[in-house]
Image 1: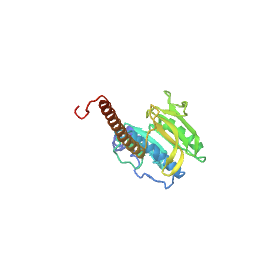
Image 2: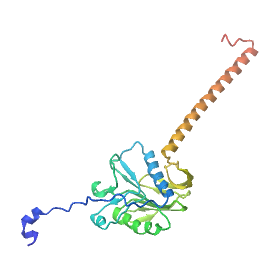
Image 3: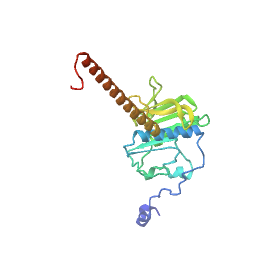
Image 4: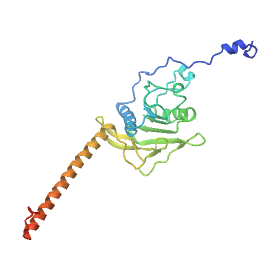
Length: 254
């Protein structure tokens, strides 16, 4: 008997509940220590840039669950960096579970490639992020290859179009309103060409420790500038006093 002829069956039917036995750690480490640092650089610098905001979440190397079929197939997907806008940033999350986030998918994803993952990152994953996630901006970068940065933006037809770099080789991330470019430096005792965010004016988006150093340097510069002004004022007063003496005036009376 079909449910059409059996009202009781219709009443008894319940929508399948989402799976709850989710795995949030597959035990697989990142490709290298440099990959780990590169991931944290992106997460921490965006958090620093938007320190006064609570309407976003930035994470990395975390599973994204989006369907029951994916869970059954144990088809784990964990972007190296992703950002989701217009969500509660105060929530603690072990992973990103789409059905617990009102259907929200990442707005921006960055995959940190290696020779062994490049084909997947620019193939299977790119297709997934375009066709299922509908992620607005997708980038790939190999931390060991400074010339490997590529990016795509989802157009009005919901298809990825390659981004054209500017004269510095940077790519514009429309969803974040930031540039993605490279910068050589030493972070966590490792010197490399890192993938970094830049603001609209082209200024490097700093890490918290870099911002603290910049603030300290600015404070020292202010103290030094004040000392220079004070020395200049004292020197000017001395010259004025000497000139008055030459004119026969007593500067102490004035």
